[in-house]
Image (cartoon, rainbow, N blue to C red; front, top):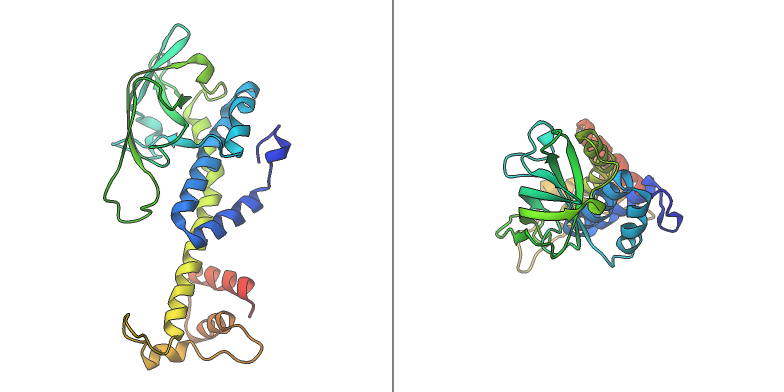
Amino acid sequence: MYDGLAAHRGTRLLSGFLSLEIAHADPSVNSFYGVHTGLAMGSINRCGSDEQKQRWLPPMARLEKIGAFAITEPHGGSDVAGGLETTARRAGGHWVLNGAKKWIGNGTFADLIVVWARDEADGEVKGFVVEKGTPGLAATKIEGKVALRTVQNADIALTDCEVSEDNRLQNASSFSDTNDVLRLTRGGVSWGSVGCMMAAYELALEYAQSGSSSAGPSPPSSSCRTIWPPCEPGRSGKGQAVTALAAEAPWSWAARQQYQAATVRYGR
């Protein structure tokens, strides 16, 4: 996965399966995993120098240092290519960052935050690794979320925050480099979504097949139970259920993909 660090390398397919299985158990944990390994480590691997990769990636791979990725701002998300408001100004051997970031996963506790800011001199977007405790960096936890409540999203304020030139990602010179990082992580987001859908399907199936409920919602209706017939000998209930569904009704393309994934996982 990370060039030059063979001990920590894995295939994209492996990474995808990990996202699927983690999200299947807990989407919040998968968000942590994706931000840390995909966005934060991915930024350093894609845009860092060899020295920066060796400095940060091994401890991050061991979870000794946790990463975050700060691009989203109060007025824009990953669509900020033409309007990134956070600025970076060169001042001798360091850079001064000013601006605000919003909804930054892992932001309240990350050891390293990859901050994307627009260079005041040339107008190009550059990446900076801001370390925990850096003066001028403040992270505030966002409270009252409806979903992914385990994820520690933060509002981040950068006020005359000084970072060394050594902490500027040496191979990030424009938003096209930032976009490469985003592009390389989109597959993991899709895998995680499939894991969520499979878990939701399994919970719905388990409920629909239950004949009674002592304290919870009313048991499923007879019409619902006819969709989930009793399991035939030698066949899994989940596999039979998806086969029955496929025969019952026309499906959208997305539903067809879910059906195919379920039959692979549980057998027809």
